Image 1 (cartoon, rainbow, N blue to C red):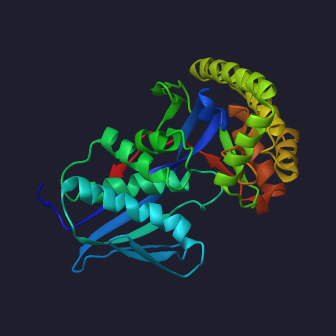
Image 2 (spheres, rainbow, N blue to C red):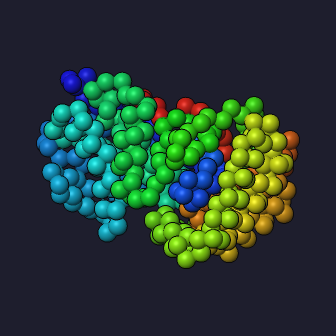
Length: 328
């Protein structure tokens, strides 16, 4: 396959998990939504044979053959190595051995449960592949998921799917994604607990919980499945009051498996006190973000309440991204 350009840029949206996180790993459904905050990957062909990667988060590294040299911070290898592998996997597939310079920029913080690793994998895969031809989304999603599993070994594939296709989707490991056609945009807001977490450690802790308490976990997974199915219908009907109640139920399940924190629960309680219909953690838990749904006709009132009282937690309204991965 011939090169058609020497540089390219692609972007992919972040995501929130509305329902079913953790349980989706064990074949229960989840509902995810892409958000209007993006990761951009700029790729340029270089003269050498190295793949270099850098980001606005002060991570940098380079790779030649199987070696990977890191600068800036000690933990950067855990983050950047799989991203370098994204680029290498595309080059291998296209039959090229060339050097690349990759620059990443993110319009949302990393490590807070908004799918930054998946968005990076999708954007890099798309940008590198577009050097050769117009990328195909299904292929991008497959290759990006393979790379993301170097970061999160038990990834269900849901994050890369939503970052690739955008919108709102109902996802199971067995059947993949199913788009949800919402009549109206969801009235959502996000708060950042400022607590950093390790997705891998949290996934492992849930796995240990499941192994030690399998009967209880099976019951909770059954409830999670019911909640996700009811939420699917509520989104289709634009029944946001019902959706809020289901979010509160989902949060109770996440507390039971030990991925919530006191700070998460405090922020949830404050959102509910300020008028939200429902609130829960989103993503792996252990910190990260809290998502809430509020009366659509009281958007400005609700948001001004949490903005004035919870400003240090960086509240912002969420809009659903329906574009998915884009080539620029």
